[in-house]
Length: 295
Image (tube, rainbow, N blue to C red; front, side, top):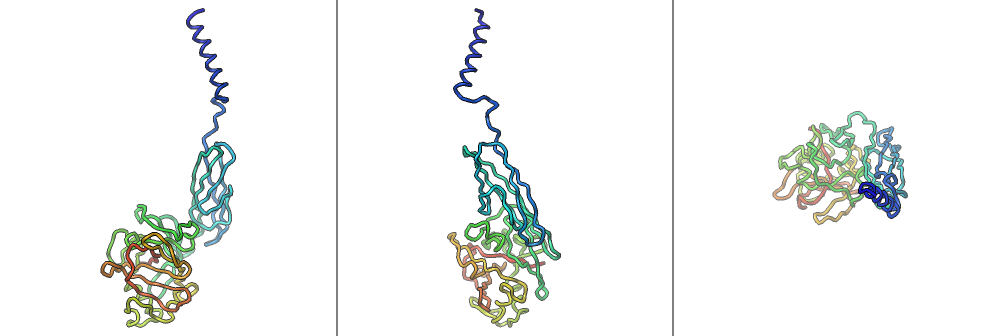
């Protein structure tokens, strides 16, 4: 028998042995796990009729689904506008991820931040304020910043916005009325701009100037949820420097852009309390809410 024939027989036998040992041929290797999201947007502003259909290909069933809003089903529905992501795990622990944005109609006089989040606005006196707390996670130049969602629960972002340290909110600036992380044409209100708002709603100059106390009877009620000013405080709580969260649905803390020594001025609103706190006693490493005011 020739050398070539012997080698051919050996190759055929080796191939058959390999197939019988592995139990599979190349054609039996499963396709790589992949996912596709098909979005259906909300039909009215702040509506909840959005939904996402998930298409899965490849991998080895069964599949497990883990959505950013906590859902475990394949498709999700009754969604408000916002960003959603999913991780799919197959039967041999391969994973694939995808994310998508559910959009909504934008009403008149609303603004949109760099990530597509929509905020309604309200005119109070000569000032125009956002009616929701900022929830952007990047700076105006798209650079990622550090921000927090109360309790690290993604479902809280759409309702309460995000929490920011003073440094992150100011985006490296120390100037009063700096844009910070607000959309273009908007800025973080100064302590003085907050006083203008408070005096328009009924405080005297003497009351507005008082520090590290609660002042202005009735003004906190006007700024609260459903209050006549239209500001609509959300009582989003706070994040301590050490990482713990507290006081959601009871208090709202809002940074101003005005420094006070090594601290910065903030405003405090408490659910059911008619006054407004003006304090400069917490470190800038606490994370509070941000409301932007129009330039």
